[in-house]
Amino acid sequence: DNRRKHFWLKYVSNITSFKVYGPSFTKSILKRDERIAEYIDARFETVYSNKDASAFILYMGDYTIIEFSNDGYACCAYKINSSKRPALNQKLNSVDDLRNSSLPLAIQSDSNYYYTSDEGRLFHNSNWESKFNHWLKEKVLK
Image 1 (tube, rainbow, N blue to C red):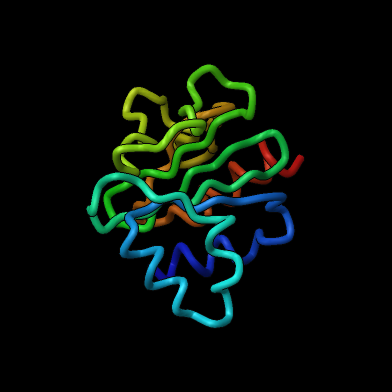
Image 2 (cartoon, rainbow, N blue to C red; image 1 turned 90 degrees about the vertical axis):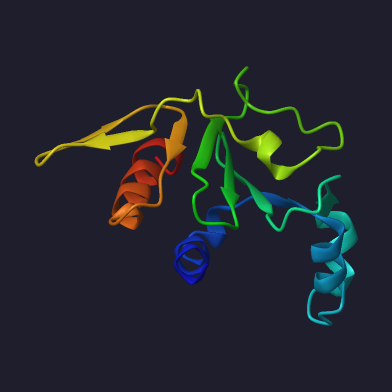
């Protein structure tokens, strides 16, 4: 998704570490790209499923942010020490294991104001970039 790519590239200097989770065929495709091939084994964790979806685990400040490659998946933001954060110390069945539909919304708005929570889901609806920017600046990059 080009919108997601352009959005996160603006914050690349704030990302202290990252990992990608996805199916083995995606890892194989990435390893054929000479520009990044040497980094793939250290940065890519395969999941058991062959579903064509990947997840990017971004570490920024005191947060773990999970962004997904596919439409329909909300971005999930967790404090590093949160009990709600998914366990990443075992092989996952699918990137769907990283989704948490019980998380509240990280940001809500009305016509005058944004209301933010420390953790939550961020949806990619019409003006999502401005909401994500606001949430990141208020919670992560403060």
